[in-house]
Amino acid sequence: MQKVVNNIKNLNIEYWFVNDGSSDNTLGEMRKLHREHDQLVHYVSFSRNFGKEAALYAGLQAATGDYVVVMDVDLQDPPEFLPKMYSLITSGDYDCIGTRRVDRTGEARFKSFLSSQFYHVINRISQTNIVPGARDYRMMTRQMVNAVLSLTEYDRFSKGIFSWVGFKTKYLDYHNVERVAGTTDWNTWKLFKYAMNGIADFSQAPLSLAVWLGTTSFILSIIGILFVIIRRLVDPSSSVFGWASMISVILLLGGLQLLCIGVLGKYIGRIYMQVKHRPIYIIKEKK
Image 1 (cartoon, one colour):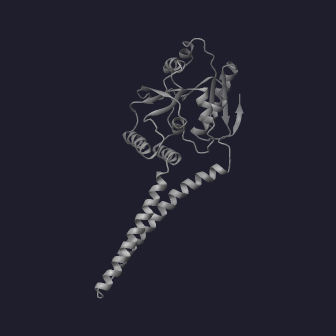
Image 2: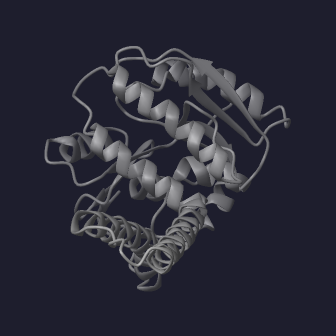
Image 3: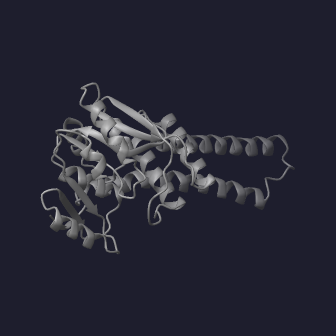
């Protein structure tokens, strides 16, 4: 990393590491690096795990440079892109130089399929365009960083926030890189929940879907009731639908109601968390 940065002339660098409540020796390594390079290396350590989005937000708040780079420490984000990023952003033509993966070599096919479908769905139902395969790895101007920091929402989806604030962005494509060490904590279920948070943050389509489902089920119920009444009047000897049919209809309508209530609850829950004004993270140690 430092070898790559040294190739960029006339540049003053500072590193900010964020320890998101890790249970290994990450904090110890950060302290060691800071002692050896106290003017170059700094760190923020949380009181517990607050999640990836909180860590990213804390890093942006701590950084003081005119240009800020966000990247993972597992080297899945190629450091060799930094000179090109800096050259492009200092040209004045762009406010952000981002990166995106053009393939997902090494990942499970099912996981890759879900990821591609997520981008397809969210771009259909949201007014904020989210670039497929885009990474958090990017270089931003101070103006863009300040714009991102001005959004103080509790539940954060940075890929959407980076797009929502605007600013001219150029993306550099690269092939997927395996992490140097360790294993990812992002299993399919965690990625699914993260995707649902993104949809809830940048689209009201689920609310609209709940309204349409409720309206459709109501109309079908009215039609069914009218059908039973008319059938009874035309042919008094006919019997109404049996117990099984009635239970099926009740379960159908009950399921639709619970689905709609669940969607509403998802949005209300996010409002509840926001209005409590809890901090996005709590710092235990900072150097």
